[in-house]
Image (tube, rainbow, N blue to C red):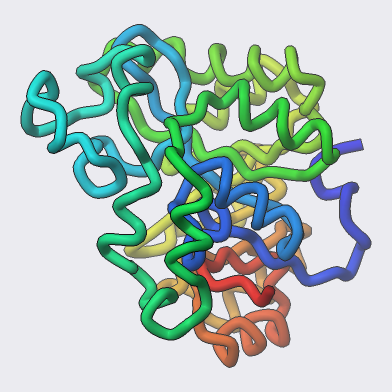
Length: 271
């Protein structure tokens, strides 16, 4: 069994991009608890703290999604890797959502402020904690390995992440993806039972099918702006799933599914 065997063969899949991030602060437990009720699998990114703890966060810096400015001991540019996990635990990764209302969900009545306040402080999550939560629900997840080239974690990131996946007995529930395709080769060398996916933006590589076959991936994750019908059909005919990010318009989602896309990563889930 592998990641894709968790789903019915012809099912079109909705992926909760960083959790239910249009109605909850992204990459928090509140976002994931909501997402498992209204999506087919979730997606999040993994970076590293100064002391090497894999944490669930998209940005390389803390400013956008935390109250880091409220703490004088944190200094610009507020890089995640400049602080230990213990230090990062001081921060609240939820209150910014009420302040910024990034998807106008509060303004448009999709979520109430009192509902968000009731969530209380949202702490930064470790990969281990999120996988333990998902394991209880046997819920699939796409874990993106952030590109940590030119950092102390470049050579150890993949092994560290795979070890945590194995320790949590989540091999069959995890799809590992990365823009750094070197990491995908490393995953395959360590554990061939973990499904891997190549992320791509800006433009598609030449000889795409051959390239993906060499990487031994079953999935290709292109950005919405580089996708067309021919690409989806050519990869599907080659036995490669096409999972597209990030698509929030309902008509665009349906068109992509009609053209053969397997999964759509979206910020806006139907609840």
